Structure formats: C-alpha cells, structure tokens
Length: 263
Image (tube, rainbow, N blue to C red; front, side, top):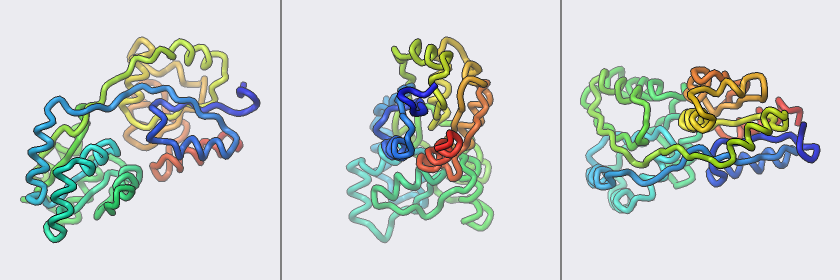
C-alpha cells in the first residue's frame, strides 16, 4: 500500500552518497526512505595508508574496488601532492565497475581500466589481460575496506602480481533504531522495494533484524541490488534479488525500480 499514493523504496544506506538515486525516483513519483545500516570511518592505522601513498609513484596501478576507497585516497594530501607534481610518473587507475569509475571521474580522474564483470576476480583478470596474460612483476596498490573480500588479492597474487593492500577506511555496522518500524511496514506491505548498494549493507541489515538471514524480505517486497557481488550475498542471506542494476550504477538501479513499479 503506497504512502500518499506513491510507492516506497527503502535504501539501506545513508542518503548523501546516492542523492541522484532519490532524485531520479522522486521524479518518477516514487518515495525513497533511508535506513542506514553501515557507517564508514577512518582506518585504525592511518599511517599505513599514508606510507603507501608516500610511495605512490612506485606503483604501476592503483586499484579501486569501491567509491569509499576513491574518496579516502584521492582526497588524501599525499595523493594530491604526488598527482599534481609528477604527471609523467603517475600510476594507472583501475575501477571495479561503473559506480566506482564514476566516483573517480567526479574527482577528475578518468580510469585507465574499468572491469566489465563487476567483481574483484573480474578486475584481476582484466588487469592480467592488459599486461599480455601475466601480472608477473606488476606493482599494484589496493586501498580497500577493513572488511574487503579477498578474491581480488588472491587472484592477483596467484598471477604473480606484486600487491600492496592497505586499509583505507573502516566499514562498521550501524544498529538502527528504526528496525522495528521497518519490519512493521514490511509486514503491512507499505514498502514496495528494498535497495542494497553493498554486501556489507545486506549483512548488517540481517544482523539488525536479529539473525544471519534476510529471508523476511523474500515474497514481502522487491529486493534490488546494485551488482553481482551484492546479489551473491543477498542470495546467501535468503533474499535473492528481483532486480540487479545493468550497468551497476545507482541511476540504472533507480530506472529498473521505476520500470518494475510501473512508473
């Protein structure tokens, strides 16, 4: 039952990073509500990122697997200094998918490589292909989350790449006081869709609901996912996505939701 005659989409993150998502749906007559399930903070050992960025020009690639990683790195004073002073010695930039690539572009950095598969293993494979089928001796810096999946690191190292991974930001679950209201609305069928922008948002919501499952969503509302990695975790949590963005961007997900909701 839409509120005020408009469908309702709940987004499991804070509003600021995805304002365009809300604006797109609002223009199509759909209300967006925010249910923050994760927070992003500074790393516990910030000097490790600082030290890696001191050596920025020694790397062949800087690899970004999230928008938060982009924000933590390209606004860092050491990055800004090195990037400005040494244009001829800059490492190349790689992005895991279009959402991460768009965050780089917003800061004036056009990625040299963007993976098409949407996962860390796909990105590693495309980097290998860019080097003629081997990563032997290729030096890569990977600024990642405190809870980053290891598939990218494992694939790169298996291919002989010299990988430096450093925690650029912490991802922590947020216990929301609105969980009870969310469940009540879900059971009353006033939530038309729930949108997930990361695997960590999915697992954090499951924890907030008192367990390790999102099965309560299945059959009660549309489940929407930003991309394949998030979709994989949603399946494991018992809430297989009804919608997956193509391409894996916030605006594409908004468009798919509007279409599915008849708007």
